[in-house]
Length: 395
Image (cartoon, rainbow, N blue to C red; front, side, top):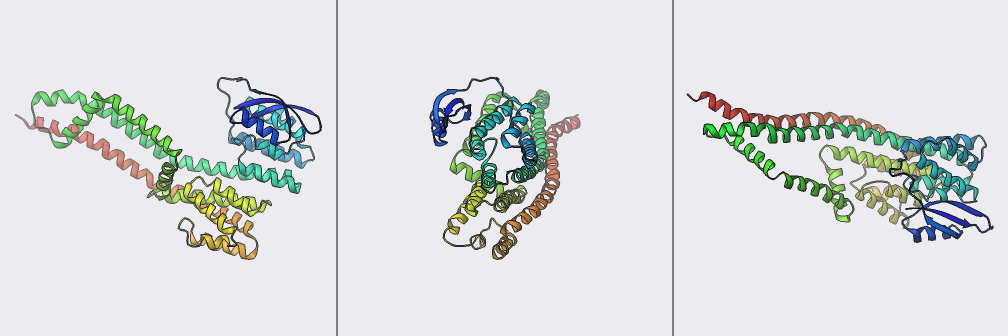
């Protein structure tokens, strides 16, 4: 929920702005933690029925703009004010205006960003917080822009690789339903009128067709229930474990998804360490952005053992989720004191591995999908043709 507020800071200055929180009590607590005395707090009015979404490209563009302006000596608040004037997305303009007001009010940029976790994730906020401690905001914004661009490119490649199988699956399902519910019923009266003994494939297809037509609403309810059940399972611990296990252990897609997860975690860990974030916080963030419960647990285990004095490579050495070569590289980085450099090099290598794996996976899935689609449609076609051949041989 969005709220508008009017607060007084410890120096007595009045500030107006917007804040995003779960409810009014959460917004109240967040403002008080930031040291403000709340004068007024109201739920924001809904301006648009369908507010425009803020894209990842827009965040990257604004980040790069801020990096250039701050590097040239422009103050952060002035840079934000300039970007607000040029921003065409009303939703994002509102966020940027709130950030500008917060910075002008003396709040840390990282604290202001943390109020919008859907737009600026924990990695973004942690890197900004580290730059505030070292006074290198401009350079850090440039690195964040590069990091976000690599993440966006990786997501785009994965989606593009999965788009073809998804389209083929939808097409095959649509063609099958069309043949069973429209084409096959046209021939059913003819077969029954002739009294010909029908082959087994034809009887099976006719039974499926009759059930689809007679009980179509049950099939529809079943499909909707399956989608709802999957969405519900994603929000439960047991369901998420099953789904994540299937993802990384699937015959063809599993190895590719493992590389994607490892690449994302290693890139985040290397970027955080290279920019002065403590190793404990870096590993915690690597766990949070892994996107798979088993890799999250792996990094959490590393974090626990690290606090007990063990090295990262020692904890990961016998873990089946991490390749042995990668563990050896991490060990060499720890021994030489250049773990951040090694991780950044490894993340680049894994980016290339992911791209190669995506191409190989797509090349393998394409003939499989074509074969499955051909087999299904061929079976239905055969079920139609066999009785016709029998009728043609009758005197």
